[in-house]
Each structure stands twice: as C-alpha cells, then as structure tokens.
Length: 518
Image 1 (tube, rainbow, N blue to C red):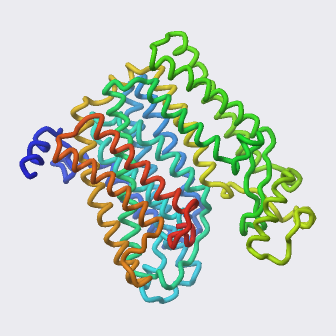
Image 2 (spheres, rainbow, N blue to C red; image 1 turned 30 degrees about the horizontal axis):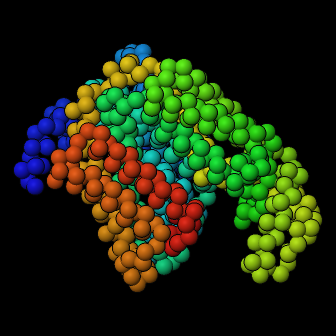
Image 3 (tube, helix red, strand yellow; image 1 turned 45 degrees about the horizontal axis):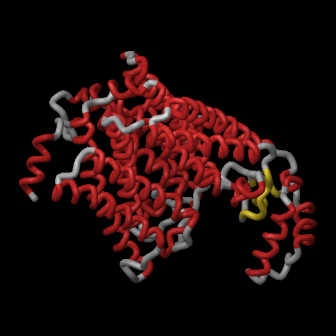
C-alpha cells in the first residue's frame, strides 16, 4: 500500500498546504482571520454600539459576499478577465471574514444572553454550536476556508466557480433555519461538544469542495451535457413531487406550515399561484426529460434542441416560483383564509391519534384557527428543507444551462484532468480522517452523555454511511487504482450523503440528534 501511495503522490500536482516561501501567498487566508480578530475585539470592547457588530448582520454581509463571489467566478469562466479573477478571490476572502466573525460573535451573544453563568465547562458552555443554524455557519466557514486554500493560487482560481454556488445555497438554507440562540440540555454540556461539532464543520466544508472538484472533473472529462441535465431534472422531479406535503402533484397547490406566535408548526396553508407554477414546471421538466433521454439514446438533433429549450424554460419558471414563494411567505395576508379544507380533517386525525382532548373535529379546528387568525403566521423558517430544495433546484438548472450553453469555454478555463484529479484525491484525503475523528469524538461524547458509545441513532448511521463512501473512494483508488470518473462519482455520492446527514436526518428522521434542531 505504501508503494501505491508513493506512486499516487508522484503523479499529483504541487499544492502548498504548508507555509509558502513567500508569506504573501497566504494573504487570502491570513487577512480574513486577522479581520475576524479585530471584529471580535471591537465587539467585546464596544458591545453592540457599532451597528453591524452582531451575528445576523455579519451573516447577511457574508451571504452578499458569497453571492458576489459566485457570480463573479462563474462569469469569469466565460469572459476571462483578470479583474474578475482577483475580485472573485477578494469576495470569497471577505465573505470568510464575515462568516467566521458572525459565527464567533454568536459565542459572545450566547454568553450575554445567560449572563455568563458558571457551568461545568465555563465559557465553552456557550460555544456557537447550539443548533443546526450555528452548525451551518461553521459548515460554510469550513467550506470557504477549504476553497480559499485552493483558489488562492491563480491556476486553480476557476475551480471556485463550482464550489461557491453550492456554498450560497447552504448558507441561504441555514439562514432559513432561524438564528435564535438556544441552550442545550445539561446532559449535553461537555468539552466534547465543541471538539466534535467543530470537526464536523471543517469536514463538511472540505467535502463540499470535493463535490465541486468532482463535478469539474466530469465536465473536463467530457461527460455529455445531456447526462448532467438528466440528473438535474431527476432531482427537480423529486423535489417538486415531495414539497408541499405532496399537495403539488395531487392537488395542484403548494402549502407551507403555519405556526402560532413562532411556536410549534400547526396547519398548512396554500400560497396562491405557486402550486400551478410548480405543476407547470414539473410538466416542462418531464417533457424535457423525455426529449433529452431520446437524444441521449438516439442522438436526435430535434429532440436535443427542444429538450434544451424546455430545460432552460424550467430554469426561468423556477426563478418565478422562488420570487412568488418568498414574497407570499413574507406578505401573505390572513393566511388562515387560505387553509385547504382537507388540512383541517387531516390535522384533526393527527390530534386524535395523539389523544389530544381539546380539539378533535375538523369543524372545531376551523373555528379555533379563525379565532386565532391574527396570531397564526407564515415565516421563512417554517419549511427550511423544502425551501432549500427549491433553491437548490434553481441553482442546478441555472448552472447546467450556463455550462451547456458555453461548454467549450467552461472546460478550457478549468485546469487539466490530472490537476483536478490530484486535487480531488487530496481533498478526500483530508476529509476522510476528519470524518473518522467525527465518529470517534461523537462516540466519546455519546458515552459521556448517554452512557453508550453507539446507539444506531439516525444521525450516527448517516455519518457512518457518509464515512464509508469516502472510505470506498480511498480504498478503490489506492488498492485498485481507480481514478477519473469512477472516483468522481464516489465523491459526488459522499457529499450527497453528507448533505442528508447534515439536514435530512435532522428534519426527516427522529433521533437523539433532533434536539435544538441538531
């Protein structure tokens, strides 16, 4: 095995991960960390006297920087201007500064909220990993850092165009989770909490970068644009068939959860016009799928032309859907009046199953909802998984449309296959030991809190399966010489499992890790 690793290292391009001979080469990493220390010092000294020195404001600035970086770096794939190249790097670096600052200032805000009570772990009690929102901030900071390590070198700069759009989606989804600071149960107040979850943030960030590198490899290796489009369409069909509690495919409506004064989620209400737009988009995607599959199999030029026209039309429709959805979630008046009748019946059945004595019939539930209509609201945090899926679909449709439109320009801008393959190997080589430490520290923390190292909790199983995917990447590469597309597919699978572990398990599967949204 050592000989295999030596041969692999001999083939890899040089990537300076240690301190370079010229310290200036590390400025994109050093500058944002120094900026973070300055902002933290200012926050401690001045409190919130300075208007933007609080977590939410800094994270909003982070999102603006990351969106700017994604737009600039993607644009630079087509126009290749030095000023855009430099601006993209600066935007990522500035975004990382705000991201890290907003995340760490949350530590101060948590302590201020409780008055810095003395606990078993002192200030570590308030370390900013109290819920899924805080974990997402760390996830994004880790991804930005991993991206900066690579794109700080001009010859790798274009690779940021494939990781930054994903980072924007992750951060946007994280902001939809709600930024309220929560106190964990005393049983979880352990030194292992900051260690375990901090490792998770870095590991997940490196996995995100490896996903972008894997996609870059497939583009450079000549995978057919139609194949990528078919994958995006299948993802879109899955999303549109499952959002809105299945009301889109079966009722032509899109419904979102309502909550009472920010509390527990109750009934679902319809957002007017969003459902019909989703049905139309679903039909367009299905038609595009049929045409592109026909072209993929028979090389039908006419089917190819109309398939791509429909695919790009679906991207436009998805943009309209997002605008209509977020506008109505924000400004929909009297959402109770839009609750479908079937929702009352379904909710009364759920209450009866839970042996709730107060409200059992659909009519009683309707009267109760109408009498509390002023307190029942929609919010951006009501359906984070659905909103994230819809946003991810738009980004996927948009990027595939752009990359297929100027495919030759995109591939010519990317480094060589050997370089991308080497970078992919190294990123997975970093991610795998981090994921291993994630499992080990999690087991130690679980034993300290719950008296057992492993309990087959849903999050534990998800993390194990993701770890196995990256283990498969390294095993097949070192022991069997797998490279190229097969390794890239392993990296894509691994990140998909990471995303499911990070978000899907937390909302879709019950378990001990569901506390505080974690």
